[in-house]
Image 1: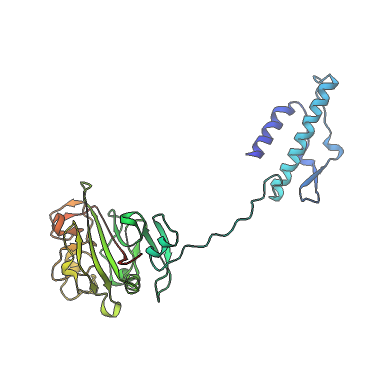
Image 2: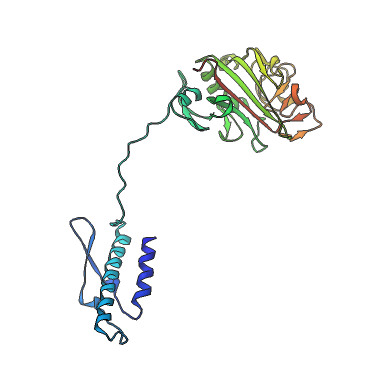
Amino acid sequence: MESVVKKTIFCLLVGGIAFAADDARVEPSSSGCPVPVYSPVNSITVNACCNKSEEADNLQEQLDEIKQAITHLVYELKTGEFCNSEEPSPSTPVAPIVGKDCSEIQENGGTTSGVYTITPENSPSFEVYCDMDTDGGGWTVFQRRVDDTVDFFLYWDDYKNGFGDLEGNHWLGNENLYYLTNQKTYKLRVDLEDFDDATRYAEYDNFRITDESAKYTLTLGTYSGDAGDAMFVCYGRRFSTRDDDAGNGCPAVFKGGWWYAECHHANLNGLYLGGAHTSYADGIVWNHWRGFYYSLKFTEMKLRPTNRF
């Protein structure tokens, strides 16, 4: 902006005056900024209209200032060194917020919902979305459905490693979930929303899964909430996907990766079907609230230590 102003002043004031700025030679001073050195070619020719010596003197002063500004401008453009800009004052580096989960991130100063890096015990670091708003915050999100842009009818390795966008539709990954749930005692929270903007939630204490050798088998404790206990049949069930299931064919029928029993009452990784539908139980189902023939608008699964304070 400063350069544009300098150019504008030059155009307005010079008028009929010839000034060979491109022929200006600059030499750096001890401060590193340029000092103009003008050769005879940089002479000033005043228009005949400037007859009064006082006016000519004033104009000469203005031209000298403009000439100085242009010389600095040429130097800045050629060297990239902006001599009139203020040097930024040194600041103290801000230490990253660290923690084993989002509850510790919150305790260590992370108060805004968003993506953070955590390092669970015995695990490499990885990024998660932290919900710092719901019921006091400190929730580590591992599943979210918001629309149909991400396919959840995927394979074992996809669910093992995770997929999607942490700020949108995603599954954090069963391997990450294993490390998370085996370092402390956790509570699971499931938030649900339908296409009428009604909401429900369910919570389970003692939430944990095993490692891959045991097929990420699920443990759940006592239910609370207002959505209904739709995950009761998931207790003790291994995780199943379209290419690695328990032999009952449930992933192929219900179009997702989940802790399927012979049937299910919750299918949060099913197809995003946008509300009421005619196909049986293959949508985003929470049977105890909206039934098998309704696919929910929004779901979010997250965990937080049972005793976090």
